[in-house]
Image (cartoon, rainbow, N blue to C red; front, side, top):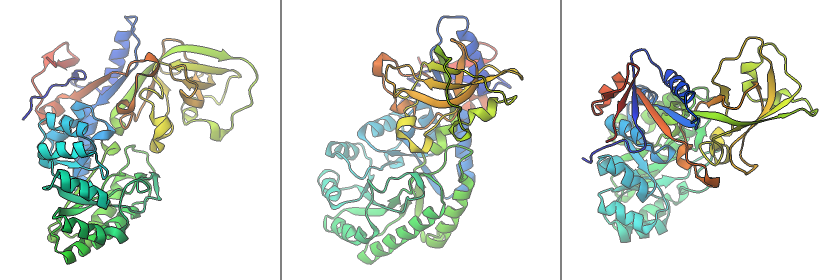
Length: 449
């Protein structure tokens, strides 16, 4: 097994009675003593572990293969590896990273239906056998590059109830499955199962039932052709936020019923899934600093209720809105951690809130919140209501764990926002991390040296 170090940053072990929010307060207070007020991301690793325990409770038959693309932070991957999760990788780079953590190749599915040949050869050379396909051309490539692959046919399923649709790009139609299986048979390739993805941010659990039913049809065709298929991959689409319109427990209950109907335990089929945002969305908070401010005094048309962000419901303490507009500029934006606002339909808005507590009678002001780059596209919130902020104040944004830091860039010369990781002593003991070095009574640092 490869030696593991947390190369990105350190992990802070929280002292007794200390929370992740307390850690944010502590770091902000430390910044107040210096000139440094850089933005940072705080990742609560306890939250990741708790999501896994929730998964085991709700979907005990389904083994999670975490979607690395969602958030590839090494501490998150290591925690999931330590509790027995597998990994959904979509490239040679992701396979390399996961293998470097000591993950065995059998715990990886190369879940990209359209792969580069050199990446397939890399998988073959490093013992990664499970991989998806959705076309005859992909079968020909795999036949040339990885004859011993264990293949999973990716089906296109109904994703009309999802916020992010995937079947338009990947997946084979159910009607074409027989021809694809016959082609695999002619090439002497082993097909072990079926996968699908109902789309990210699925809002109707019936989508899983229909997709599982479709998969059963493919299993039946495969049996007619002589294949011995043993794997069902139900993909992703599980909600990451706690306030999503469809809860994880509701989805899990319908999945369990559908599995019992179409793939009862006695049939011997193993079931995996590819959750991503489910595990990490709520684990991360962005802490950004107000680096500039502009007050707009000219008369502006009043904002209607549907134009205001949820922030208005948080800070309109006395129903009074002042007659000026604020423009705030933060040191993170859409070219950094907040790229989700441009490319992730499942999280197309964010809710910044002040770190400092508002006074009961403090007025709120319409405001626009910008990122730091020179591009006018770099806007985070166009219409919000907040108490007046000053340069040097901090704004926080929750639910920042999915498709954020991993998609950020250094555009305009702004560095990627650093990540700090926290966990409780109980979590540290559970996943058997290295012995810590005590820094003070509240925070313990695990050295990366």
